[in-house]
Image (cartoon, rainbow over all chains, first blue to last red; front, side):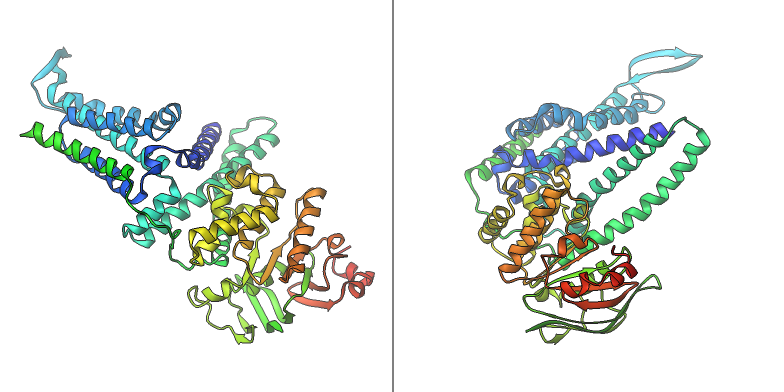
Length: 273
Length: 239
């Protein structure tokens, strides 16, 4: 259990470190980076809305390819993308797996067999539903990666502000973003310090230590949260989210993003007709 | 001109009295060190001077005006004049890159992007951290973090710069650099207030020392008078 907790925290720490480094991608000279963040956010969210509302597997697969195209054109490293996304389709596949089979989904069967006198097998509707869920999730997540890593977190918050998202939501996101890495790295340091003092593994001691750790995390998070808030207030934070004042004129990049979206929707409408 | 007047200030944390009967006058252009052992109330006093926490009792005057409304919006004009660098740079540097941390204050002051860029450029040149601007703060050394934390406050160009434990956990070279930065800021006309328990750095640096212990001001005087009083320093765990 202690090892599991340790491994989870290490992975979390690595993950948040990589999220912090998203600044590296967002400062590249890619398609999404060069676009007006307001336009990029609207277009990318619209793609996500399309992916989760339309039930055409081929069309969603097409949207997924578009998301990959955005990832390539935004200079987001493919290895990084695959590392970020790998568990999501895996978990979705696990969730969707039972629906492939009868009685969780209804016949006609694609393949059937007798199991202890009970007829079961893979159904067309189950397969269709599972594939649809899987594609929807992976497409939505891919576009989310383009949003967070392509637009970049600071520009994203600025775009949310200018698009009229509520301040409370923007503040919550920015606080979480700033704060979570610090607390995870502190917990990681605490784990390392424990490791350096552990001479032998005693389950009882390890369990007791975990409860101490959890208590200490709550205390530390409260203490750090308070101090970080004071730091922000000291530097002029008053509950608002002013964002950097910048003129955001539409460029040909923004127009091409809008054109891509219109083309995709038009293609869908023509196929539907 | 008198910047601060504190009259009989008291403050408690969770019913534990941290400051008791603080009376203090601070003039423009002074370089003050608040010294005292751990838990003396130095950091709390700096937070009170930065108007982050309202005192339980007593009055604070800043630039001749009594401050009794501690709401965030009411204090926005004062925030531009006072800057506090916290003891732990990890809580001070909360953005993905040092550049964004340096921009945080000026953005909240409502400056234009060009002005913000200019301030970042100037401050990072003065503090010699230009090469750190695009790095994530957690990859910096303690000395670099401290300099970045100071820079994040200096981009607001405050009249009063307060630094909590400026040289804590730093190697000798970083310590010298921080001391030299503080000295040059003071010579540039800023009022500097630092809190520390390291007497060796303040000897040639400050012109006034305030000794605190158990939430009270024990002694307020010039460095020669205070640092020469071994009995006073021993009584207050400073040597």
